[in-house]
Image (cartoon, rainbow, N blue to C red; front, side, top):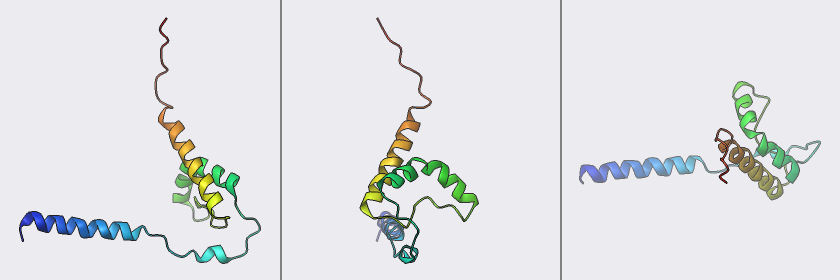
Length: 102
């Protein structure tokens, strides 16, 4: 086995470990009764404020980015749409305005 093949094998195994580490697992907290169930609109809001929530969650254990007491796909759709809105608007925030040519 050549050195190139060994490097490729090590990178492939490391990549496989990274991908499997990101696999979703069971959520034991979701089975607990909650006073409210988050839906599409709350998912949209949580996604929109996710950059700020992420920073706050680094410093406190009481704040999490994703609400585990949700109604499933509707919450997920709202959350992803909110994240897309939050990060797409931030991309053009520092851009110079276009000049109009007459």
